[in-house]
Image (cartoon, rainbow, N blue to C red; front, top):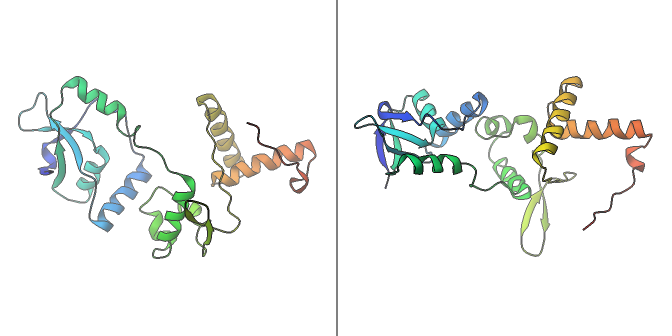
Length: 214
């Protein structure tokens, strides 16, 4: 059972490695303001200050509540040692799973049935430009064990990269985006492919299909 604690009694853990960018912090505030709910904040009794608490998970939520003028936060109080608190900080946010692209797309499409792209983009990580690709009546695609909503013409590609590969791809996407004024990562990736095929003298329509190997 959570307890409501005054924000003045909450202090961030000094070793918390996670930070939220300004754009996402703004979306978080809008989300809390819109739906009126948020995940409880995980705290522990402060190790050096009496009657105060140290935030272990939910630092951005605390700042969002402050910005909204909400005086108290819903908190779960965990009695953790310094070492246990550090272990929790190291795991929090990293062991929570990741989105399955097809399921994420279906969720967004259903949200777009009741919300405008502009409104939705203020509350979730996706930008309005990315939501543009989904703002059409979806098709139903049925497999043996699930049914998902997929926009006509949209193809989902999922890659698993090493850290080194990710650094190279990110650098290329950033460079192409700036040089060609492309904001969307998918468009930047397509632009890189266009450049490569043009240099190889191959038309995209005549590019040979690449067979997957086991």
